[in-house]
Image (cartoon, rainbow, N blue to C red; front, side):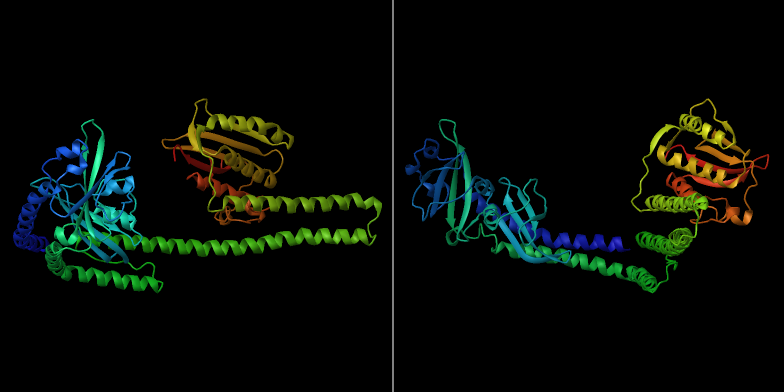
Length: 512
């Protein structure tokens, strides 16, 4: 329905403006056929400028001067002052056979900013009218134009020259020609506005009235079309406005239910998606704040104990309560407490670095099989020293995926360190690597006592230090593992293998 109304309105619009446009065309044709240059005077080609009679070909009461291809004046006479025009300014002057009629409107409002609109009409040839337009800001920088040019802005003088206006007194035009020796010259003509009629004013001209009429008619057609849309547009606007009000009051999961125009359905769908995402971000923010509060409380607790112990031992040393036989034992206790504090600070530093919003992995598509082999070759002696057994199953086949080598080493280190802290000597550590369709599967575990089911869901939380959870002394090791795997867009879970052994199962996508 709306489309039919719009087509009818456009037909009505065309029926009205066609006679007006034809009238403008006919009038301009009559005027320009009388004034356009037919040919370059022979005297101008021969350089006999004093003998040129301008009245026949150019009209009465006209002045001119000649410049060479470097824009240096080679001739001027009967001029009220020596013209001062640069090469750039001369390049903007309209040609003699394209004298423009210009409409310039100051202060039009576009995007809530005051702009300058300039529209230029001229004859491209004897038959066809061409037009150009510029939209400028208050400083005359070009915002929009249909002219193919690298120019970014105008000065006021350049803008006026481009539209044939010189000092708001003369219409200016140019004619390029070659002399009898083949050298390039340009003749620049000046006509008084009062004697030249309506040509050349960039801010005035009776012809502009006709252009304003066209704009009014087009605006009228647009208004009719918009009124026809109003009924169908009003309902979705009311629905969306109510949803926005509820959103501002804190209702993030309010779903906008609208069926109708496809464009408004899309807007409502996008609004619903936005509301759900904002709700999710707010929940994450609340959860992050709770985690941060817990981290601060846990850090305070974990630092307070060793600091208190160290202060107590130092006080005992200062008071002379510890004899020389016991001093070495107490020094070692202080050393271990200081070491646990260092371990906590280092782990917290690593956790904070990985948890920063700007953290990025150094990802490479590389052979994970070769990386795992090299890792366990280096790790074997260390595990053997602690009397741990190790079973590694890495297929001979090369398996590639996208991963960060440094942080994947951290994942393996933290999981194995966790095993060493919470299992006894003689425990067997397992490592299996397998390839799936879209993922690489990594399993790391042991045949130790395992972990209680009620503690498994908290295993990857920061500062989970209860012994049944089997995290390291700082409570951050497994949390760091989980974040690194998440950054790889992978997963980590706790499983039991066929022998009921405790296993971490990691799956990394082959390509991110």
